[in-house]
Image 1: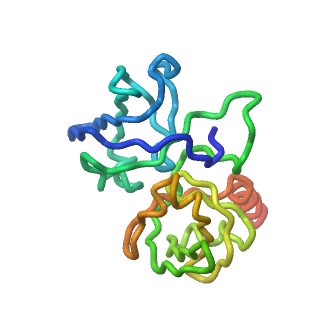
Image 2 (image 1 turned 90 degrees about the vertical axis):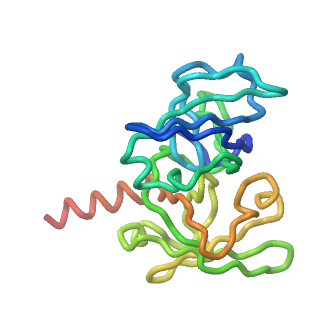
Length: 201
């Protein structure tokens, strides 16, 4: 489980395609504190650390993604130099600063508008039709692994506000209109929708 509070920015070092795609990612994490088999959220997608070694002031770790993950997320667009939001898995006793996330991407959205508002900015995202019923104004949404509050939700789009701090310490500040982003809906919304669906059968 994750909370959507980014703990580091990583940079893709290498991509090796095949039956599964292998990524090597540099980060400021201490390799002594990251076990093989640990789960880390990568731009909202939970991936397992299969190798890690010290590098500079941090480490490089390797993860693998199966074809399903590559097809249903933005990972297929990652190249050497791509910057990604990272979050270590939630541990008992950790502060729940955002909202509960599974690291399972529900769909890919497209940034449709970016508008400054005071010192912040309003980002409008078009989401898949199957995902929009799970997104509500004042509810929670994860964009590339970042926990955000929905400002407004319409038929095909929703908007969120990005404060300067979020833009600075995550990759969201570098997004442009037309960019694709990983989306994960609120867990409670997902289960409520499923409950209503089963009751109507």
